[in-house]
Image (cartoon, rainbow, N blue to C red; front, side, top):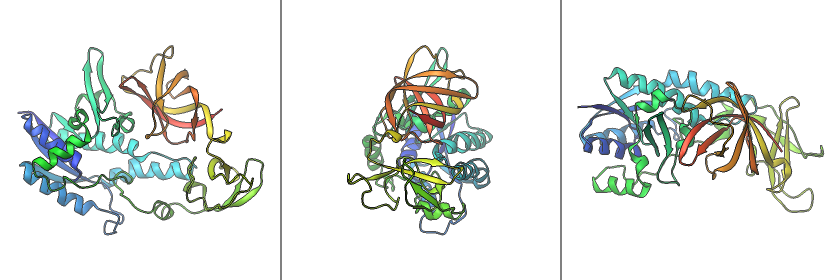
Length: 360
């Protein structure tokens, strides 16, 4: 019997994943990952409850489960990079890094040591084998598709990975959980930082990064306020800037538009469609292509520069082993350094890179 180790988080998606695989005849073993220890007794860290939920689900399904602690790996490979990026004024995506370094490296290695042939997670994505290798596809539920966060996976990782719920709509996953009596069938989805949880972000970041207040300026150089530290703002941010009223009399809301690290200046603009918020070109570094080779630059593709957006038509203007450039047909809003630019060819996720900068 083929052994599959399922990453069980205590949530409904990974729980149904384990049940589906058992129904398909696999020998299923659950593995609960504990990756954060700094304030495990706080109201925001739910790892103890998540473990209890995962263990009770394993009991209902009738599978073994063990807990494994990857806190050292998480701190070294994910959190340290997360802080470096914020300190440099960029806005990283910890879920992308966490998938690449923990769930599909540390976890995969551990599962192989347990004698697994495959691993499985509750991600909404799909894997397809072709004559040319393995492809990562969007999840069938477009509202839940998580291929964006998985775009740094490689051929070896995809060859050993199963995503059973990627073939289902979320409503069906909930229905299955209810029908088989899972105790977490109605548990709400987590939306916090990967493995750190849902907590007041500015206060959390402030424990690890020093605040360096500086001027908040408009494009014409007028000082309109003071920021608490560039790391605590992201491009396109509207709430929490601390600016009320209107300088230009338009009554339009303020948005974070640029960061000048050299002068510790935060630039803000008024109006959602201000030119400083729109870009048609971007350069991305650290490219990672699922096939192992860059896409054909002669073709057009779709790309996302943030998770919750539709694909935008673009072309690869230049590429190489360490960077690539994209040009979009339509201006993109608040393209943010540190976030991922991910390319698609229809339903196939091709890979992507880390946004370094964008311009008009």
